[in-house]
Image: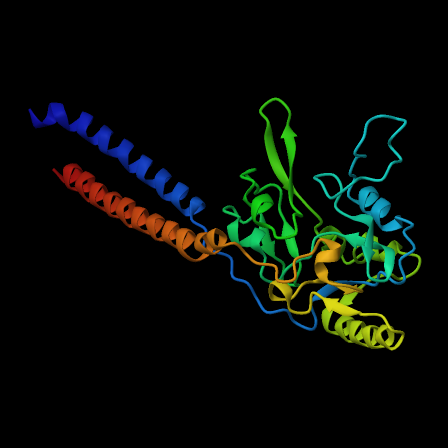
Length: 301
């Protein structure tokens, strides 16, 4: 009687053993600890923007599109040379006119590459992460299109781009600090390298801060209400800007904040999820060992 049931019993348990191993792998793949923010280091790479030098040529805007192979906002041949109105999934760098206390002048907008980035805090897959050199990198292969980054960024930088027109699946898109150029060692951000008047420059963050402070002193001596934006905001930005008025005049928050829900996600929900995965792993491992022992006992019989 036992011999008749044994093959079926063994088969079911072997199947469970295989499924347990599969579940173990899935759980390991799904568990991801919350990303840890770091302090900005003097040797981090960064960008400095000086609006006083900017002539609005939009060479930075065009270089960004060219290097990253980004299409025009409009498909209308009569409008393809019109400047985009704002950042989008296919416009990562843009020059706009701003009105401040010194009058109208140009200002450049792109990802701020925060040291304490809300987008990284809420990303559940690790698609957005802190590069060791300081900027916020993006791995679109890991992006699941949840859109959390687009909702929590205080600067409205990330946007979703439809990756599959049939399914509507989307991927996050934003300035990556030309990470491919940085990693390959062939240069820095295309926008900074193309700027003909050095309104955009790139280099080590510590050196750029010293340059920005000296520039602010120079502009204040000329009667301008100049200040540095990005030295401490959001943990310290890797896109530093010289402002000639209050940040709000540029559409920038004086105190960029990561919303409470994002903090809850990073500090509570993600670690809790990791704990749940850990419990699942222990349960699967326990079942794995128990069933393997039972199979061996049956084989000995």
